[in-house]
Image 1 (cartoon, rainbow, N blue to C red):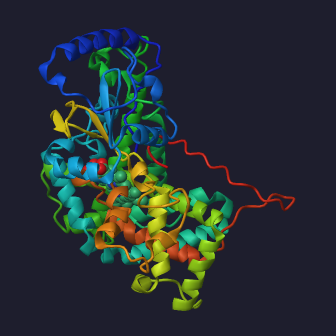
Image 2 (image 1 turned 45 degrees about the vertical axis):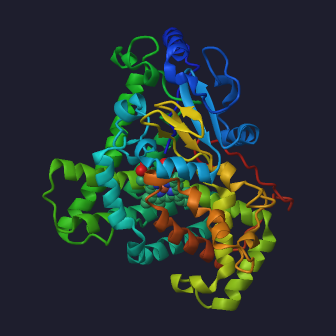
Image 3 (image 1 turned 90 degrees about the horizontal axis):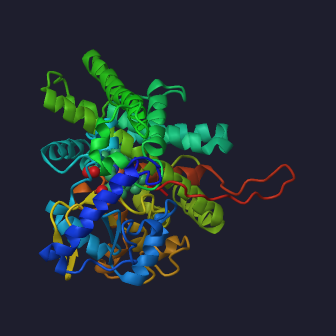
Length: 496
Ligand code: HEM
């Protein structure tokens, strides 16, 4: 799922427009009465461009965490007048995103991604209103914690397929993880069982995810048309307006991504052979929906499909990396599995309570891996004042989950992978345990918190328990038997 981006370096007429907009913004800032309340602290902005030069496209969470050390729990920057607020502690994120959720749950209005490319109905882009509430309710109905056991059979099936796939070709592990993530959501959401890597819907999802993550979201910010909406009215042949042609092509792919698996599932419901899934739960046999209701179901399904892939892939990759770097942890977890369930069968959900060390490994995988380090940006609907600081209306509000999970006072030696920090033997108070639990931040906050959290809490547990039971994981060797050191490069703006 892409973060909104602006190609600020596009040398087009956008430059002139930016200048004019900044002039008016600057004038406004110096003359409005409420501007007497100070903004939160942050790195000093430059005239016009603001903190553009302080921003980075690579691992922005590291820079944001340096600012947290320097400026505290709430930090403010602006880029061409667009305010960006970083919330650097779980307490502050909870205060604002949860308790003041009525004004902190909106999303930025994105013309390029949302309107021109047709993604505005995908939940992570959808503004906070009635459609959002209806779709979240549908997701809650199907993916609430009480429903998850209904999907255990699919989770087991996909986990086994994953192991088989991986053993067939370990060097292509990313493909196996991708297939696992896609296959899991296709079955849980659309009731469709993937049987080969050439599955039509799996390929469609891969293409669409690639589009969302790499094409719709290039570069460091948002598109010029998001700042200067009139650019959308330029003809595609006009210099600097080629984005319109791209948007048209991309919109067609997104349309397919939304419609095709949905139409296939409807046909299977009609035939009476759909597998238990989100769509079978929500639709049952009721296929004569109003246009509005059908849109809700269709987009809710697609949003979950789209939002689950990259997060799952990041989590599993980080888990492998942790095991490669920490063979002692892998050995200890394998020993626990051997002692508790033996080597005759694979782990099952009913074993979970008897495997405390695996639980610690999962906790630490969530914490250390931190798949979405800067959350997905929320947008502030009304101006707010917090601890004597003014947060302007329309600011992007970013929870710095990375800083929360690298807090040395809660997690000493935070950069190290140490599952023992979560062991029951520590005499922590209930309050400290609550604060330490990474699930309280890795899935985001408030009314936008990830609706797939309960599902992945089960799917990832089973996956890592099965991997630990079945596989030895270590660094690869080259043809001369020399160890190949892993090259770790986090090049995505949103996922780690
Ligand atoms: C490793 C797994 C996952 C992680 C770490 C994760 C994390 C997140 C985060 C941080 C957000 C943003 C929350 C916010 O804005 O405050 C989010 C949103 C979302 N996630 Fe997940 N997610 C995961 C898997 C899934 C799965 C499996 C699904 C669906 C089956 C899913 C569906 C969604 C949707 C639809 C949203 C948008 C919610 C909204 O804007 O209201 N996620 N997720």
